[in-house]
Length: 168
Image 1 (cartoon, helix red, strand yellow):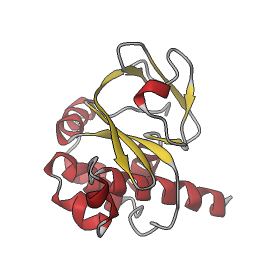
Image 2 (cartoon, rainbow, N blue to C red; image 1 turned 90 degrees about the vertical axis):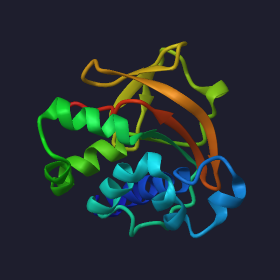
Image 3 (cartoon, rainbow, N blue to C red; image 1 turned 120 degrees about the vertical axis):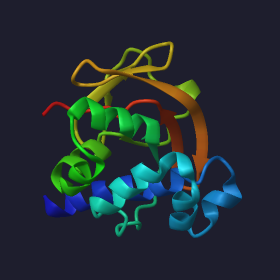
Image 4 (cartoon, rainbow, N blue to C red; image 1 turned 180 degrees about the horizontal axis):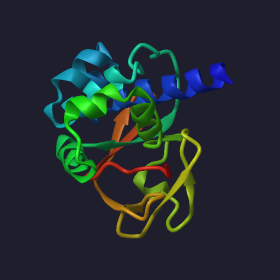
């Protein structure tokens, strides 16, 4: 079971860091961590990946799809939960559960997104996406996909405007 969990976290960490490099294949092929850290839109996401100890497991080949929340999405989550960024980053178990809920196995481009069909994440729970690219998570909250098909060497990223949450 531990091996399975480590594999899932490896998939997530590699995908998040690769995805943060953007759609340029040359960028995705560089020292991926540096590219992710240089992308201002995802600095809190990168901090969360590091805090959850997911960044050290970058050995998974993928492909997979990452639904990446922006800094604005994380700021809204902090307000919604009534916690500080430091408090959120200190909760490794919660971070791991939430971050792996944003990853789907396989490369799912926008044209291939299954509409109104439950999509299973590597975390194990599902979410749905409607025809307007609105995600509904396990808590009935919604997030909009604001940018699609940012290709990385091991998958694809879709940028979202809200952190999605699994069932507690």
